[in-house]
Amino acid sequence: MKTKFRDKTIDITNQSSKKNEFYSEWNYFTISILENDKMYYREKMQYWKEHRYYVIVQNPMGSCIVDGAEASTQSECLQIAFDNIDSDLLDMESMVANKDAQEMEDVKEVENWLSRMKY
Image 1 (cartoon, rainbow, N blue to C red):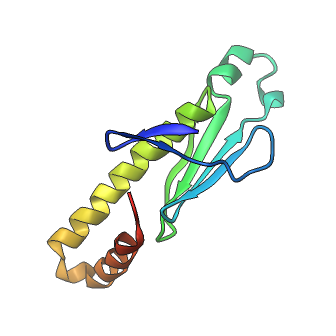
Image 2 (cartoon, one colour):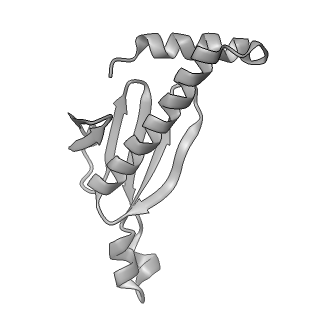
């Protein structure tokens, strides 16, 4: 599936074999896109169509940076994921650039992750 990231279009491979599910790891970020259960929306089908999928993203340090953002398509959810990944990467890059003494342990861990990433 294609998505935009930092003014480039990148192709992300779905590693899930299930029909309405998307799972991928990209530069140590874990992205899961799952389908909302239709049974909960029997009387409000239009709402279900608009919120059919939800996305969860975990960063390399184990923090959940997106938890349940919803959209009508997997592509929209993937874009939400990458918008949030970009924001998280900017925060990590800023932390490393500023090297706050109180967060020096975190800075070393973030430097390690950033050195492994290719984007």
